[in-house]
Length: 513
Image (cartoon, rainbow, N blue to C red; front, top):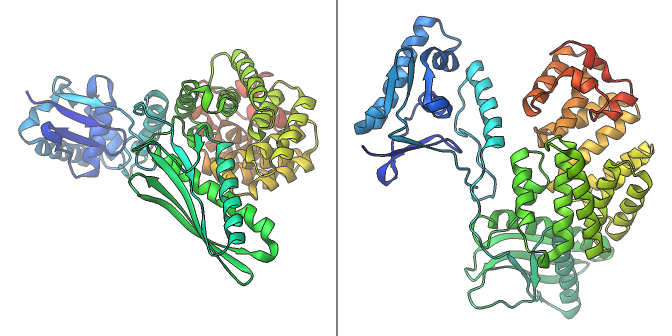
């Protein structure tokens, strides 16, 4: 019997030998395949499938519609129609014929695919099922490991300029951009020279002065293929050159980071994704920690250890590890080693501050954060750490200003949720609850898996008598935090210090869930 493959990570796809497409065109038919394929032994009760796909129709109409969906699947299978099997009250796929593939393969932009990404069935029962299935898939599926390869090499080419002074300005900008990248991504930076055939990302610029303005075209291309990844034209005001150069370097840094994320899955794959490092998703954080653990410390020992400490601290904050005490101790050791390897690294100092803050070492946390901001005031990890340290010591207005200053830069695009979270916490401590709630809602837009923002939303909405909104936040929290209860939220060890100090834990006695 021919073998078929059902893929559920990304669009629902059913293929036969030679990658022959057997996927039905109908949305509900593909939805049925997703439900059946993810069920135990790939079998599901017909009544359950009918409720998921046609809950808004009367039973007779729903039953007839389900028969039509199953017929569509059988027709799409063609000569392999025996793969769709049924029995008393159930329907399924023959596991001897159909192989389920749940491998998560990153796309060209480096992002991991979503479970059943092409499904949009307007049925409330199916929408609830799909949301839970996607969440389970993110936590349970191990993404396919990247092919082993070299770290990407970033080369800075000599700028082409109309005069020597403009060439120097362009060189300074490119050098600062490359340096800022190397303070965030464990990678290799080299002169404009590689071994024959070696893969590299080349940063180049053409610059020309016209009166009081400098026009500069910056490109990121691949060598040896000459593929253009990114280009941008900058116009710098020579009258305020210092600020213009700093802004330009930061924007180029963001461009390089975007290219690196994409290049991970195309050529010379990065060992770690920054979007994973700064996420709140359990599977992605685990993937980032494993990638950093496996990296060669010789590339950038300080940054590798600092990012590992950041990931582990996030896992502790998000209650994603079975032994928080052991994890935070390991994070503290890594952060210390990161500072020993590079005492001047703003990222290493900032991560150390965050770890010490969790351990209630307020003055140490503040000192490290201050040092980090002094080393690099545009480093968003440093600004975040400083804001957090100020909050821990009760300086809420200053904490708010630091978070605002961090968000005003370009680099927080890598992790906007964290600084929005700092703003929300500072506003809550200041009693500005309406503004705080808006910040926590923004956090959810960037990071739906973020648990602390859901706790704040539930508490703040209940405080202003929005029980429906509080219930929605609690239900979302229960989905992303298995075992969550209101009694747990009220307990002394649960991480809601700001809510407890503000007398905002009334929701824990609401009985909403």
